[in-house]
Length: 168
Image (cartoon, rainbow, N blue to C red; front, side):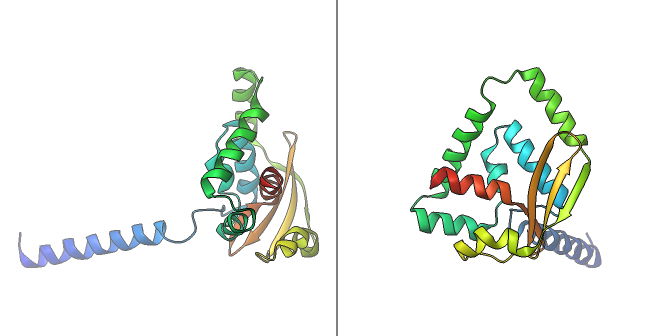
């Protein structure tokens, strides 16, 4: 391989590595669209996936829960997993599969922008984060969620509220 070819390969590898690091860095939680944050909560419930459910709260909130309630992230995940398994217990596989399809295709039927004071009630009490925007979303397949934006990502208020109630 000639010197200029090695240089090109090195440059391409550097760009690819930088792209990977940029994509992998930062917060793993949150969604880029508000509808996806709401949809992910329901999908996590239907799939009994505690990790996906926990990705719907900011990392700062997770740290707050760990420090305030003296629990580890693993303990929180176990509590959420137990809740999800109890929630879905007794459901028929066919119904779950049908429900997943409905949720994946669901469209927002109605939405309301919330006053930030409404969504900050719990967060200010916790003194953890300050939401940038908040919406109540009602989907055409019979579910709703309240979502908020924090640091450019969307999170489920309903997921956070449920987790607080589980470990309190």
